[in-house]
Length: 183
Image (cartoon, rainbow, N blue to C red; front, side, top):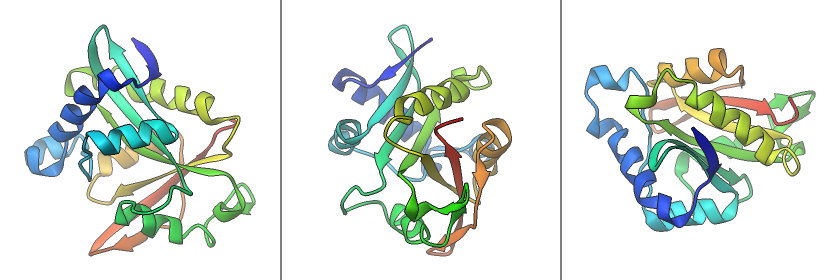
């Protein structure tokens, strides 16, 4: 399994994998394994990759998973959930400081293909993202919809991220989870 930064030739597979894992494409049973809240097009994938980056897990020529990263100061337009999360940063404490006082990047979405789940791909991507961001960022921050308990368990129990104060947007509650890039 190779973990590396995405290249333009990967974008088609990234888009296909994320589209396979949006709630409207999944059965209720499959949603229990996690899902991605939003869909990205080629231009959005390219912009994310050019800004901070997308890490991919490649099994030969096949995409096993991906993880997006964006600077928290990326100018609008941003996904409304990202804006709602960023508004909470002045009140959110981690490591003895507010998130607003730290160099924070937005972690996610992250997605592992069905055939590769349970093989440690998320953990490998997580280790790589810490190494990739350590020099320029203190903290990674992600949001997880309360309707996605599998993702919350993977991130908090499996990857040992810290859950902070949840926030709401449009009838949905989101967990804010963070991690130090130094650990």
